[in-house]
Amino acid sequence: MGIGLIIDNAGWFALGLVLIALSALTHPSRRRVWMWALPLAILIVLAGALFPGTSGEFPGSTWKAWLAIAALAFGVAAAPWYEANRDQDTRLIDLVRGAAIVLVGSGITITLLGLIGWEQTTRYIAAWDLRLAAMIGIFIGVWTGLTGLMHWLRLKGTLKASAPASRNQQLAQWAVLGIIIVLGAVAVLYPDLATAPLVLLIVLAIEWAALGALAHPHEDLLHIQARHVGLVGVAIVTLGYVQSSLLLLVIGGLVVAGSIHFVKRQGAFCQISRRPFYADETEDARPPEAENGLSRD
Amino acid sequence: MDPTIAAYVVLLALALGLTGALRAEREHCGRGLLIVTTLSGFLVVAAVSALLTSQSALELLLSTVAVFFGAQAAATAFLLLRQEVHAEPEDEIDEQELLDEETNREQLQRREHRHDGEAH
Image (cartoon, rainbow over the protein chains, first blue to last red):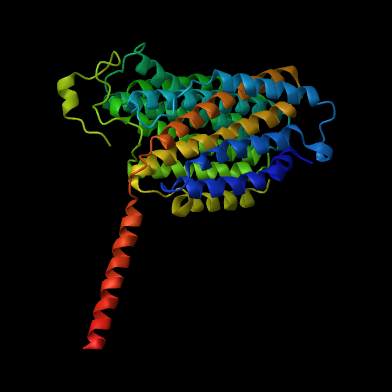
Protein backbone atom coordinates (compact mmCIF):
# COMPACT_ATOMS: atom_id res chain seq x y z
CA MET A 1 0.00 0.00 0.00
CA GLY A 2 1.42 3.40 -1.00
CA ILE A 3 1.79 6.30 1.38
CA GLY A 4 -1.02 8.19 -0.40
CA LEU A 5 -3.50 5.40 0.34
CA ILE A 6 -2.32 5.21 3.95
CA ILE A 7 -2.89 8.96 4.32
CA ASP A 8 -6.30 8.71 2.63
CA ASN A 9 -7.49 5.80 4.80
CA ALA A 10 -7.59 8.10 7.80
CA GLY A 11 -8.05 11.10 5.55
CA TRP A 12 -11.72 10.40 4.77
CA PHE A 13 -12.63 10.80 8.45
CA ALA A 14 -10.43 13.89 8.70
CA LEU A 15 -11.97 15.41 5.57
CA GLY A 16 -15.50 14.91 6.91
CA LEU A 17 -14.45 16.59 10.15
CA VAL A 18 -12.82 19.47 8.25
CA LEU A 19 -15.91 20.12 6.13
CA ILE A 20 -18.21 20.13 9.18
CA ALA A 21 -15.78 22.45 10.99
CA LEU A 22 -15.65 24.79 7.99
CA SER A 23 -19.40 24.97 7.88
CA ALA A 24 -19.53 25.71 11.61
CA LEU A 25 -16.66 28.17 11.82
CA THR A 26 -17.67 30.38 8.90
CA HIS A 27 -21.00 31.02 10.62
CA PRO A 28 -20.38 33.37 13.56
CA SER A 29 -23.26 32.15 15.73
CA ARG A 30 -22.02 28.55 15.88
CA ARG A 31 -20.01 27.25 18.77
CA ARG A 32 -16.35 28.16 18.74
CA VAL A 33 -15.39 24.72 20.04
CA TRP A 34 -15.45 23.56 16.40
CA MET A 35 -12.06 25.18 15.82
CA TRP A 36 -10.51 22.23 17.67
CA ALA A 37 -11.77 19.96 14.89
CA LEU A 38 -9.05 21.28 12.55
CA PRO A 39 -6.00 20.19 14.59
CA LEU A 40 -7.90 17.01 15.49
CA ALA A 41 -8.28 16.23 11.77
CA ILE A 42 -4.53 16.74 11.26
CA LEU A 43 -3.80 14.50 14.26
CA ILE A 44 -6.11 11.77 12.92
CA VAL A 45 -4.26 11.70 9.60
CA LEU A 46 -0.88 11.83 11.36
CA ALA A 47 -1.87 8.91 13.57
CA GLY A 48 -3.01 6.99 10.48
CA ALA A 49 0.31 7.65 8.74
CA LEU A 50 2.53 7.01 11.77
CA PHE A 51 0.84 3.83 12.93
CA PRO A 52 -0.74 2.23 9.85
CA GLY A 53 -1.22 -1.06 11.68
CA THR A 54 -1.35 -4.23 9.65
CA SER A 55 -1.91 -2.37 6.38
CA GLY A 56 1.42 -0.55 6.60
CA GLU A 57 4.43 -1.60 4.62
CA PHE A 58 7.19 0.10 6.52
CA PRO A 59 8.83 -2.75 8.46
CA GLY A 60 11.43 -1.47 10.88
CA SER A 61 10.22 2.10 10.60
CA THR A 62 8.98 2.35 14.20
CA TRP A 63 11.97 4.44 15.18
CA LYS A 64 11.20 6.79 12.28
CA ALA A 65 7.68 7.18 13.67
CA TRP A 66 9.10 8.15 17.06
CA LEU A 67 11.56 10.51 15.39
CA ALA A 68 8.61 12.16 13.60
CA ILE A 69 6.69 12.43 16.89
CA ALA A 70 9.70 14.08 18.57
CA ALA A 71 10.09 16.55 15.67
CA LEU A 72 6.35 17.30 15.85
CA ALA A 73 6.51 17.90 19.61
CA PHE A 74 9.53 20.20 19.33
CA GLY A 75 7.91 22.09 16.45
CA VAL A 76 4.69 22.68 18.39
CA ALA A 77 6.69 23.73 21.47
CA ALA A 78 8.67 26.23 19.38
CA ALA A 79 5.52 28.00 18.12
CA PRO A 80 4.89 31.46 19.61
CA TRP A 81 2.02 31.61 22.10
CA TYR A 82 -0.97 33.87 21.43
CA GLU A 83 -3.44 34.66 24.20
CA ALA A 84 -7.11 34.15 23.42
CA ASN A 85 -8.81 36.90 25.37
CA ARG A 86 -11.95 38.71 24.20
CA ASP A 87 -11.22 41.83 26.24
CA GLN A 88 -7.79 42.36 24.77
CA ASP A 89 -7.50 43.82 21.26
CA THR A 90 -4.66 42.62 19.08
CA ARG A 91 -2.58 44.95 16.97
CA LEU A 92 -2.47 44.26 13.26
CA ILE A 93 1.31 44.17 13.45
CA ASP A 94 1.13 41.13 15.78
CA LEU A 95 -1.18 39.31 13.39
CA VAL A 96 1.05 40.10 10.40
CA ARG A 97 4.09 38.97 12.38
CA GLY A 98 2.35 35.72 13.30
CA ALA A 99 1.36 35.12 9.67
CA ALA A 100 4.97 35.81 8.66
CA ILE A 101 6.16 33.08 11.06
CA VAL A 102 3.63 30.68 9.52
CA LEU A 103 4.92 31.52 6.03
CA VAL A 104 8.55 31.01 7.08
CA GLY A 105 7.79 27.58 8.54
CA SER A 106 5.60 26.54 5.61
CA GLY A 107 8.15 27.84 3.10
CA ILE A 108 11.02 25.87 4.65
CA THR A 109 8.87 22.72 4.80
CA ILE A 110 7.80 23.04 1.15
CA THR A 111 11.37 23.74 -0.03
CA LEU A 112 12.76 20.73 1.81
CA LEU A 113 9.98 18.46 0.55
CA GLY A 114 10.61 19.75 -2.97
CA LEU A 115 14.31 18.96 -2.65
CA ILE A 116 13.55 15.46 -1.34
CA GLY A 117 11.09 14.93 -4.21
CA TRP A 118 13.69 16.15 -6.68
CA GLU A 119 16.35 13.86 -5.22
CA GLN A 120 13.99 10.88 -5.56
CA THR A 121 12.66 11.62 -9.05
CA THR A 122 15.93 12.40 -10.87
CA ARG A 123 16.58 8.64 -10.82
CA TYR A 124 13.67 8.13 -13.23
CA ILE A 125 14.03 9.95 -16.55
CA ALA A 126 10.36 9.48 -17.51
CA ALA A 127 8.95 10.98 -14.31
CA TRP A 128 8.94 14.54 -15.69
CA ASP A 129 5.59 15.34 -14.04
CA LEU A 130 6.97 14.50 -10.59
CA ARG A 131 10.08 16.59 -11.29
CA LEU A 132 7.83 19.47 -12.38
CA ALA A 133 5.87 19.16 -9.12
CA ALA A 134 9.13 19.15 -7.14
CA MET A 135 10.40 22.19 -9.06
CA ILE A 136 7.17 24.12 -8.43
CA GLY A 137 7.43 23.16 -4.76
CA ILE A 138 11.01 24.41 -4.51
CA PHE A 139 10.16 27.74 -6.14
CA ILE A 140 7.01 28.30 -4.06
CA GLY A 141 8.83 27.26 -0.88
CA VAL A 142 11.75 29.63 -1.42
CA TRP A 143 9.44 32.50 -2.44
CA THR A 144 7.03 32.01 0.46
CA GLY A 145 9.69 31.39 3.11
CA LEU A 146 11.78 34.39 2.06
CA THR A 147 8.73 36.66 1.87
CA GLY A 148 7.71 35.63 5.38
CA LEU A 149 11.24 36.15 6.67
CA MET A 150 11.55 39.59 5.05
CA HIS A 151 8.17 40.66 6.45
CA TRP A 152 9.13 39.42 9.90
CA LEU A 153 12.49 41.25 9.81
CA ARG A 154 10.80 44.43 8.58
CA LEU A 155 8.24 44.32 11.37
CA LYS A 156 10.99 43.65 13.89
CA GLY A 157 12.78 46.77 12.67
CA THR A 158 15.90 44.89 11.49
CA LEU A 159 15.27 45.66 7.81
CA LYS A 160 13.97 48.84 6.26
CA ALA A 161 11.50 48.80 3.41
CA SER A 162 12.95 49.86 0.09
CA ALA A 163 11.39 52.47 -2.15
CA PRO A 164 8.79 51.20 -4.62
CA ALA A 165 10.49 49.68 -7.66
CA SER A 166 10.97 51.87 -10.71
CA ARG A 167 9.70 50.74 -14.11
CA ASN A 168 13.14 49.45 -15.13
CA GLN A 169 13.51 47.56 -11.87
CA GLN A 170 10.10 45.98 -12.39
CA LEU A 171 11.09 44.92 -15.89
CA ALA A 172 14.32 43.43 -14.53
CA GLN A 173 12.32 41.49 -11.91
CA TRP A 174 10.01 40.09 -14.59
CA ALA A 175 13.07 39.14 -16.64
CA VAL A 176 14.40 37.26 -13.58
CA LEU A 177 11.09 35.39 -13.32
CA GLY A 178 11.36 34.51 -17.02
CA ILE A 179 14.88 33.14 -16.48
CA ILE A 180 13.62 31.12 -13.49
CA ILE A 181 10.91 29.55 -15.68
CA VAL A 182 13.42 28.69 -18.43
CA LEU A 183 15.85 27.18 -15.90
CA GLY A 184 13.04 25.16 -14.36
CA ALA A 185 12.00 23.82 -17.77
CA VAL A 186 15.62 22.85 -18.57
CA ALA A 187 15.98 21.08 -15.20
CA VAL A 188 12.71 19.20 -15.64
CA LEU A 189 13.35 18.09 -19.21
CA TYR A 190 17.07 17.25 -18.85
CA PRO A 191 17.56 15.79 -15.36
CA ASP A 192 21.14 14.71 -16.17
CA LEU A 193 22.15 18.35 -16.59
CA ALA A 194 19.89 19.66 -13.85
CA THR A 195 22.29 20.47 -11.00
CA ALA A 196 23.58 23.84 -12.26
CA PRO A 197 20.14 25.11 -13.44
CA LEU A 198 18.59 24.01 -10.15
CA VAL A 199 21.17 25.85 -8.02
CA LEU A 200 20.88 28.95 -10.20
CA LEU A 201 17.08 28.74 -10.01
CA ILE A 202 17.18 28.69 -6.20
CA VAL A 203 19.58 31.69 -6.12
CA LEU A 204 17.38 33.68 -8.51
CA ALA A 205 14.25 32.69 -6.56
CA ILE A 206 15.89 34.08 -3.41
CA GLU A 207 16.64 37.35 -5.25
CA TRP A 208 13.11 37.50 -6.71
CA ALA A 209 11.51 36.91 -3.31
CA ALA A 210 13.75 39.19 -1.26
CA LEU A 211 13.59 42.24 -3.53
CA GLY A 212 9.84 41.83 -3.95
CA ALA A 213 9.23 41.52 -0.19
CA LEU A 214 11.35 44.58 0.63
CA ALA A 215 9.33 46.77 -1.72
CA HIS A 216 5.88 45.65 -0.47
CA PRO A 217 3.91 48.60 0.95
CA HIS A 218 3.31 48.36 4.70
CA GLU A 219 -0.46 48.41 4.46
CA ASP A 220 -0.49 45.56 1.92
CA LEU A 221 1.58 43.06 3.92
CA LEU A 222 -1.38 40.99 5.10
CA HIS A 223 -2.92 40.75 1.65
CA ILE A 224 0.41 39.68 0.18
CA GLN A 225 0.70 37.07 2.91
CA ALA A 226 -2.81 35.88 2.03
CA ARG A 227 -1.66 35.39 -1.56
CA HIS A 228 1.25 33.33 -0.29
CA VAL A 229 -1.14 31.19 1.74
CA GLY A 230 -2.79 30.46 -1.63
CA LEU A 231 0.61 29.49 -3.01
CA VAL A 232 1.07 27.15 -0.05
CA GLY A 233 -2.25 25.60 -1.14
CA VAL A 234 -0.81 25.09 -4.64
CA ALA A 235 2.24 23.44 -3.07
CA ILE A 236 -0.05 21.13 -1.06
CA VAL A 237 -1.78 20.18 -4.33
CA THR A 238 1.58 19.29 -5.91
CA LEU A 239 2.51 17.24 -2.82
CA GLY A 240 -0.84 15.46 -3.02
CA TYR A 241 -0.13 14.65 -6.66
CA VAL A 242 3.38 13.35 -5.91
CA GLN A 243 2.21 11.27 -2.93
CA SER A 244 -1.03 10.18 -4.69
CA SER A 245 -3.15 11.50 -1.85
CA LEU A 246 -6.68 12.71 -2.62
CA LEU A 247 -6.88 14.29 0.84
CA LEU A 248 -3.94 16.60 0.16
CA LEU A 249 -5.42 17.52 -3.23
CA VAL A 250 -8.73 18.54 -1.61
CA ILE A 251 -7.05 20.43 1.24
CA GLY A 252 -4.85 22.28 -1.26
CA GLY A 253 -7.91 23.31 -3.27
CA LEU A 254 -9.67 24.57 -0.13
CA VAL A 255 -6.62 26.57 0.94
CA VAL A 256 -6.44 28.25 -2.48
CA ALA A 257 -10.19 29.04 -2.29
CA GLY A 258 -9.85 30.60 1.18
CA SER A 259 -6.97 32.75 0.01
CA ILE A 260 -8.96 33.95 -3.02
CA HIS A 261 -11.91 34.85 -0.76
CA PHE A 262 -9.74 36.95 1.52
CA VAL A 263 -7.88 38.75 -1.27
CA LYS A 264 -11.01 39.49 -3.31
CA ARG A 265 -13.21 40.62 -0.44
CA GLN A 266 -10.62 42.58 1.55
CA GLY A 267 -11.55 40.63 4.66
CA ALA A 268 -11.41 42.02 8.18
CA PHE A 269 -10.57 40.54 11.57
CA CYS A 270 -12.50 40.65 14.84
CA GLN A 271 -9.40 40.68 17.02
CA ILE A 272 -7.75 43.85 15.76
CA SER A 273 -8.18 47.11 17.62
CA ARG A 274 -9.46 50.08 15.67
CA ARG A 275 -6.40 52.29 16.09
CA PRO A 276 -4.07 53.27 13.20
CA PHE A 277 -1.46 50.81 12.01
CA TYR A 278 2.18 50.67 12.88
CA ALA A 279 2.63 54.00 14.67
CA ASP A 280 6.01 53.95 16.46
CA GLU A 281 6.23 50.20 16.16
CA THR A 282 8.89 49.65 13.54
CA GLU A 283 11.77 51.53 11.99
CA ASP A 284 9.95 52.03 8.72
CA ALA A 285 6.77 53.22 10.41
CA ARG A 286 4.88 56.01 8.76
CA PRO A 287 4.77 59.36 10.54
CA PRO A 288 1.60 59.87 12.62
CA GLU A 289 0.40 62.65 10.25
CA ALA A 290 0.42 60.20 7.35
CA GLU A 291 -1.20 57.52 9.50
CA ASN A 292 -4.24 59.66 10.22
CA GLY A 293 -5.22 59.43 6.56
CA LEU A 294 -5.16 55.64 6.57
CA SER A 295 -8.28 53.77 7.43
CA ARG A 296 -8.49 50.22 8.56
CA ASP A 297 -10.00 47.51 6.35
CA MET B 1 -1.74 9.39 -9.87
CA ASP B 2 -3.78 10.05 -12.98
CA PRO B 3 -3.43 13.80 -13.72
CA THR B 4 -7.06 14.00 -14.92
CA ILE B 5 -8.41 12.62 -11.65
CA ALA B 6 -6.12 14.95 -9.71
CA ALA B 7 -7.30 17.97 -11.73
CA TYR B 8 -10.98 17.05 -11.20
CA VAL B 9 -10.50 16.63 -7.46
CA VAL B 10 -8.69 19.95 -7.12
CA LEU B 11 -11.28 21.79 -9.21
CA LEU B 12 -14.12 20.30 -7.15
CA ALA B 13 -12.43 21.32 -3.90
CA LEU B 14 -11.81 24.81 -5.27
CA ALA B 15 -15.44 25.10 -6.35
CA LEU B 16 -16.61 23.86 -2.94
CA GLY B 17 -14.43 26.42 -1.20
CA LEU B 18 -15.40 29.31 -3.47
CA THR B 19 -19.13 28.68 -3.48
CA GLY B 20 -19.92 27.42 -0.03
CA ALA B 21 -17.61 26.05 2.57
CA LEU B 22 -15.52 29.16 3.07
CA ARG B 23 -17.98 31.93 2.24
CA ALA B 24 -18.57 34.41 4.99
CA GLU B 25 -19.52 38.05 5.23
CA ARG B 26 -16.66 40.51 5.02
CA GLU B 27 -16.35 40.84 8.80
CA HIS B 28 -15.44 37.17 9.04
CA CYS B 29 -13.20 36.81 5.98
CA GLY B 30 -10.17 37.21 8.21
CA ARG B 31 -11.33 34.15 10.11
CA GLY B 32 -11.61 32.29 6.78
CA LEU B 33 -8.01 33.13 5.98
CA LEU B 34 -6.83 31.88 9.37
CA ILE B 35 -8.91 28.70 8.93
CA VAL B 36 -7.21 27.87 5.63
CA THR B 37 -3.83 28.84 7.11
CA THR B 38 -4.54 26.24 9.81
CA LEU B 39 -5.58 23.78 7.10
CA SER B 40 -2.21 24.33 5.42
CA GLY B 41 -0.89 22.56 8.52
CA PHE B 42 -1.66 19.39 6.54
CA LEU B 43 1.78 20.06 5.03
CA VAL B 44 3.12 18.36 8.12
CA VAL B 45 1.36 15.16 7.04
CA ALA B 46 3.28 15.25 3.76
CA ALA B 47 6.50 15.90 5.69
CA VAL B 48 5.86 12.98 8.05
CA SER B 49 5.14 10.63 5.16
CA ALA B 50 8.38 11.80 3.49
CA LEU B 51 10.20 11.00 6.73
CA LEU B 52 8.65 7.54 6.97
CA THR B 53 9.55 6.69 3.36
CA SER B 54 13.03 8.24 3.43
CA GLN B 55 15.68 6.02 1.84
CA SER B 56 18.91 7.80 2.75
CA ALA B 57 20.42 9.73 5.64
CA LEU B 58 20.10 13.02 3.72
CA GLU B 59 16.39 12.46 3.05
CA LEU B 60 15.88 11.53 6.70
CA LEU B 61 17.61 14.69 7.91
CA LEU B 62 15.77 17.01 5.50
CA SER B 63 12.39 15.47 6.24
CA THR B 64 12.93 15.69 10.01
CA VAL B 65 13.69 19.41 9.69
CA ALA B 66 10.63 19.74 7.42
CA VAL B 67 8.42 18.07 10.08
CA PHE B 68 9.77 20.45 12.73
CA PHE B 69 9.05 23.61 10.74
CA GLY B 70 5.75 22.25 9.45
CA ALA B 71 4.58 21.56 13.02
CA GLN B 72 5.70 25.01 14.14
CA ALA B 73 3.82 26.69 11.29
CA ALA B 74 0.68 24.61 11.91
CA ALA B 75 0.68 25.35 15.65
CA THR B 76 1.23 29.09 15.06
CA ALA B 77 -1.61 29.19 12.53
CA PHE B 78 -3.97 27.41 14.92
CA LEU B 79 -3.11 29.76 17.80
CA LEU B 80 -3.81 32.76 15.56
CA LEU B 81 -7.16 31.22 14.61
CA ARG B 82 -7.97 30.56 18.26
CA GLN B 83 -7.23 34.19 19.08
CA GLU B 84 -9.52 35.36 16.26
CA VAL B 85 -12.37 33.02 17.18
CA HIS B 86 -12.21 34.09 20.83
CA ALA B 87 -12.23 37.77 19.79
CA GLU B 88 -15.71 37.39 18.28
CA PRO B 89 -18.06 39.66 20.28
CA GLU B 90 -20.77 37.60 21.91
CA ASP B 91 -23.51 40.15 21.39
CA GLU B 92 -22.81 40.68 17.69
CA ILE B 93 -25.90 40.04 15.59
CA ASP B 94 -25.38 38.17 12.40
CA GLU B 95 -26.31 40.09 9.22
CA GLN B 96 -28.05 37.05 7.77
CA GLU B 97 -30.11 36.60 10.92
CA LEU B 98 -31.21 40.24 10.71
CA LEU B 99 -32.25 39.76 7.10
CA ASP B 100 -34.16 36.56 7.97
CA GLU B 101 -35.90 38.36 10.82
CA GLU B 102 -36.93 41.21 8.52
CA THR B 103 -38.26 38.78 5.90
CA ASN B 104 -40.26 36.93 8.56
CA ARG B 105 -41.73 40.19 9.82
CA GLU B 106 -42.74 41.24 6.30
CA GLN B 107 -44.38 37.86 5.67
CA LEU B 108 -46.25 38.11 8.96
CA GLN B 109 -47.51 41.62 8.14
CA ARG B 110 -48.60 40.50 4.67
CA ARG B 111 -50.49 37.56 6.20
CA GLU B 112 -52.18 39.82 8.73
CA HIS B 113 -53.24 42.23 5.97
CA ARG B 114 -54.68 39.30 4.00
CA HIS B 115 -56.61 38.09 7.06
CA ASP B 116 -57.93 41.61 7.68
CA GLY B 117 -59.03 41.88 4.04
CA GLU B 118 -60.86 38.55 4.24
CA ALA B 119 -62.58 39.55 7.52
CA HIS B 120 -63.86 42.78 5.97
